[in-house]
Image (cartoon, rainbow, N blue to C red; front, side, top):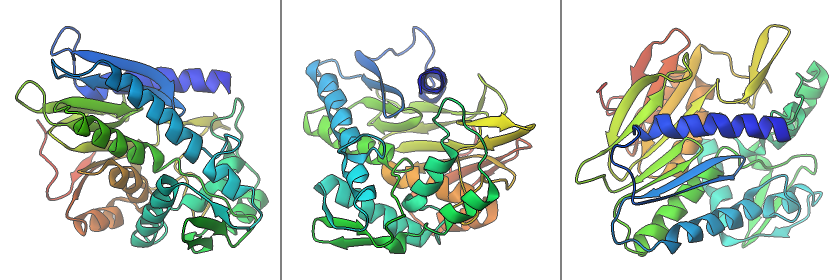
Length: 329
């Protein structure tokens, strides 16, 4: 998937610059590390003067370890083994188990708008392939028939799919989970100021230079402009947008945010949803769920979750904030 991955990596670098809110030469981190992982560009920055330089290398190793657990395409990963088990039980790591449990919880909370059993659709649409094409209607209908978190069975440290043709895809949750674990590791090692950016999933540890981190939210209609900025400390900012990944066929833009109930790209007038939350894994999943639900139902969901706030941007540029989302700055 060379061309697509390179294009995605370039876009993620731009997203990293936009989301950090930083300009060249201002408030530079003491140390930073940029790598391509998780099918995106990862930027890790520490602002503490006395931090151990080896911490960022440790974080990169941890990212690789998690990717080897959560990837649906890497042979031998927990998720690949579950998907290939034909309905048999598979023993998985405690991290995989925790993420699956949390994903099922959010799926139930969102009425299935977020669903990690979308793997049959993910594979069918193949947005990360070199030449993706819109599938046939019959193929989409067949994939949808195997979606639903009720197909996931958990027993102790074992997981199985009751439907052998179902599959798990943690792409809408893994980056958030990994960001939370990296934060825990850095804080345990004395880091008080850092920014974790996993391809646009941004998590701030503390603040910056005694103040807040200024996180820019991309304008879905422009490659280099910002729709808004938020000032945060110890918060996660995650955006899901229809501009992030997709292809044009027959004059129609097909993007990667799929409605599990229809099997097709969501087309409800939204361009992006940004979730502000304490835990990045919740923000990661909610950003997708709210996009699928649409502005009204998505807003209702967020208002019922005290630890989350949201900014919805529609295709006309209209902005809609939940009651606790910061006003434009």
